[in-house]
Amino acid sequence: MNRVKASMTGLALLAAMAVTPAFAGDVTINLHALRAKPGKLYIALQKRGEFLKARASYGEVVASVAAGEKTFIFHDVAPGEYAVLVWHDTNQDGRFTTEPNGTPLDGWSIRNGQKLLGSPTWNQVKFAVPADGKMLDLAMFYPDDGTSISQPPMRLPAASSQ
Image 1 (cartoon, rainbow, N blue to C red):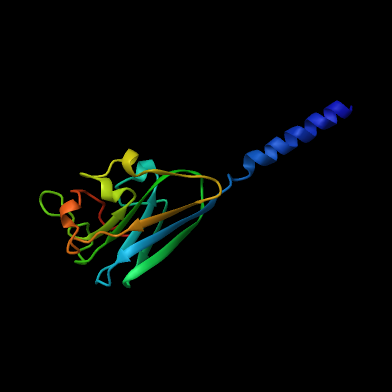
Image 2: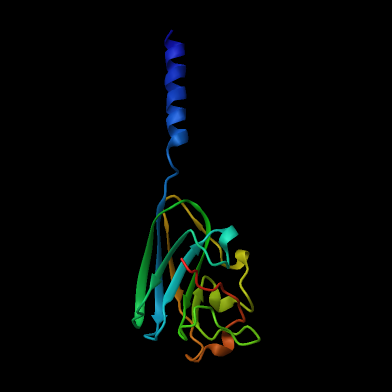
C-alpha cells in the first residue's frame, strides 16, 4: 500500500511539473553609443524562426532617443537561443535603409556586429539564454560616426505595423 501511495505521489509531482512553465529569466541589453537623432529605436529579441523578419518574441520601441546609454530589460524570457537586433530609423522612413551595396544608412546594433563582413547569419549572432537570464552589452553603429568603413552590408526587417 505504501508503494502505491509513493508511486501516486511521484506521478502527481511529475504531472505538476509538466504543467509548470519552464523557469524564465530576464534578458538585459545595455546599449551604448546611442545618438540623439530623430526617428524611433527598435529593439527585438528574436528566435530562430523570427530572425531578420518583422516580428519578435520580445521587443520595444523608443519614440525619442537620447544620446548615451540605455538599458532594456525583457522579463520572463524562456530559456533558449535568441538574437538581438537594434535599429535606429534615423531617416524616419519605417524601413532599415541601406545603400544599394547593402551598407546601412540607419543606426544599428547586433551581437558580434563589429565582426560581421556582410548580412548577419543566425549562427554569427545567436546567444543562449539560460533559465537565470542573460546580460549583453552592445554598441550602436551609425553611418556618419567614422565607422562606416567597417560597417557590413546587411539587411534588417522593416518596421512592423503592429
